[in-house]
Image (cartoon, rainbow, N blue to C red; front, side):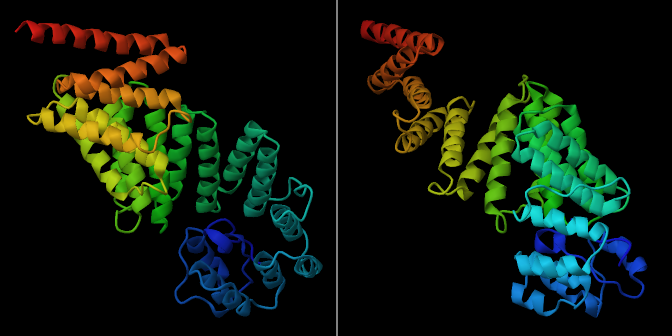
Length: 403
């Protein structure tokens, strides 16, 4: 048995595989644990290379050696009882625990395996992570996060990529639960530092994007955090290019725009940040499919319309008419019945744009409808804002009638 194994280093099936012993493995393994396959790949490890390169399962199985590790891997490919029993008969000690941890992940065991303190390294990390996922299934999120962080720590000096993957899972789980704080920022930064020398560009870009979202969520008016978020997004765009990753590209531009919009303005940057937001929203909409990403498309379209409505430009009238048209596009897919509050805000924004254009006969019915919905929903503050706009229109109409 090899002293070290690349468990959790590579994505997909290869991340579960065990490698059989070969000559000079100890000299190859440090580089492999950083994500670099040896060139040429040893004959005994050709199955591993085939899995990394995404070859068919049948081809990977064909290359498996008749060793205990080979039978473990066959169970990974075909998680069936007969392959589990065969692997179990050939494995011992920590590898048996690893086998049962995998069997739990395949829903073949009721509980993840217990382990002793003498279990160390990547196997200990894998089993700890399995207990973390078990905790998540029981909605014990704090325990699960703590176990993932412990797993990452257990393997950090041995297998930095595996450690980074565990940390990124802990961080993304925290973020999804709204646990956004400076500690979350540090989790993402630590994971990024662990993979800075690896060949996994996509993983680096994804973590950089996630770090950007953490800065953005934590910002709450803090200009420095918005600036850090923008740096992260621009860095991620160097990998997530529009021709290869259109969805990621669009998502990053959405977040870029929202960061520019939320950043506190000053006398010097208001026009620039609004222009940058508009540019990013237009770019996002080029690559967001209206049908398959309807919510994101609606959000980007509304944000673009809002940005255009309040942009200081020599083409104010053109911007306002474009905003009116964009609101109308969203109104074709947004229904009052399913989201009355969102619908009312949308109609109110369109009415406001029309009023700025002086199209009062079109603006008043829109604003009146929005005010009525807000009143029905008990949103007195929004109803008051719309009523003030209607009052302003009435005053302007009176002034015009006197001319």
